[in-house]
Image 1 (cartoon, rainbow, N blue to C red):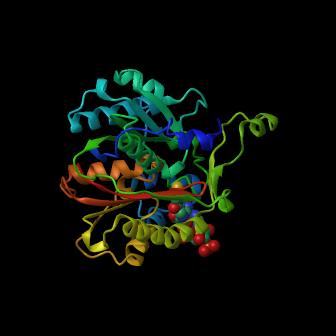
Image 2: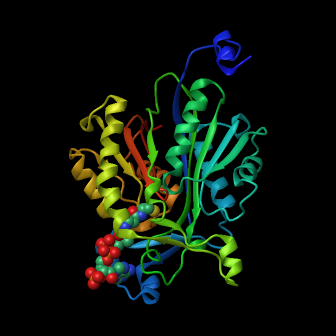
Image 3: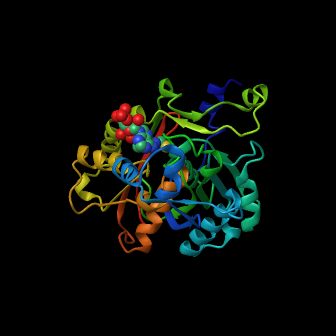
Length: 341
Ligand SMILES: CC(C)(COP(=O)(O)OP(=O)(O)OC[C@H]1O[C@@H](n2cnc3c(N)ncnc32)[C@H](O)[C@@H]1OP(=O)(O)O)[C@@H](O)C(=O)NCCC(=O)NCCS
C-alpha cells in the first residue's frame, strides 16, 4: 500500500479533535556571577560607556563551575513545575534548546528528564540558537494540542561564557549564561498562538562557531572553538526583518498591537528592541522586556529569563498577552503570542 493509499484508507488517521494548549508555569535560573562591563573591557579595548550606548548592557551573568547546563536546566524546570503546580511525574516530554551543551550526544534533555524524576519522558535537544526557546514552545504546543503529549517542559539554557572568546571585540561583552523554562499543557482556553518561524540560510555565516572540531584538531589548537558574529549585518537584519515577522505574528494570531500587554523579544541588543518597537508602532501601554541590561544575551534562555523576571517584578500579570520573538544564528527565527500563566 502506498503512503497515499494508507492516508486515504484512514488507517493512520488520529481520533479526536485538537485541544487547546497553554503555558502553565514559568521558571528561571539566573547564573550567579555578576560581571560588570569593567571586567570585560580590558581585553577588548572598549569602555563601559561604549557597551552601554551600543548594546544597553550594564552587566551580564556568567555561570560558576557548579552551574552546568544540566544544573541550570533542572533548577529552572523545578521552578516552572512549582509555578504550574505540576509534579515532575506528570511530565511526558522535555525539550531543551541550547547551543552550549558541549557533548554532541547524548542530548542533555534526557539527563534533565531523569534528574527531575519524570516518568521516562520523551526528551531531546534542539539547536536553533537564540530562536531555540520559541521553536521548542511551538513544538510543545502542537504536541499537546494533537494529544501526543500530556505535559511538556520547554527549557532554554546556555553557558555561552564557555564558548565566547574574551578577546573578541564583537562578542565578548554580549554573551551570558542562564536558563529559563515553561511547562506546556492542555487548557480550556487557547494560551499559545500560532507560530511564525523560518530561516535565512544565505546568512548562515553571520553568527557561527568559528571552526568545527576537525579544523581545531588539524590546526593543533588546544582551545575549543568560539562563537563569532558579524554584528552589524545581524543588527540590521534583526531590526528590520524581525519587526515584519512580529507584525505577521499578530496578524496570524488575529490581534492588534493595542491588544498586547507585553513585548518580550530576544534580548540581543536594547537598540534592536527599541527599533522593533518603533517599527511595530507599539502603544505606550505595552510593557517591553529589557532584561539584557543586567543579564546580557543568554541566547535560548533570554526570553524565558526576561518573561519570568517581569512576572516576579509585577510587570507581567496572569492573563496578559505577550508577544515573544526570538532570532539568531542560522539565521533562524520564531515568534508567537502567549497568555502569561
Ligand atoms: C555588536 C554590536 C553591539 C556592535 O554595534 P555596532 O553599532 O553595529 O558597531 P560596529 O560594528 O558598526 O562598529 C562601530 C564602531 O565601534 C567600534 N567597535 C566595535 N566593537 C567595539 C567594542 N567592543 N568596543 C569599542 N568599540 C568597538 C568599531 O571598530 C567601529 O569603529 P569605527 O566607527 O571607528 O570604525 C551590534 O552590531 C549588535 O548588537 N549586533 C547584533 C547582535 C545580535 O543581535 N545578536 C543576535 C544574535 S545572538
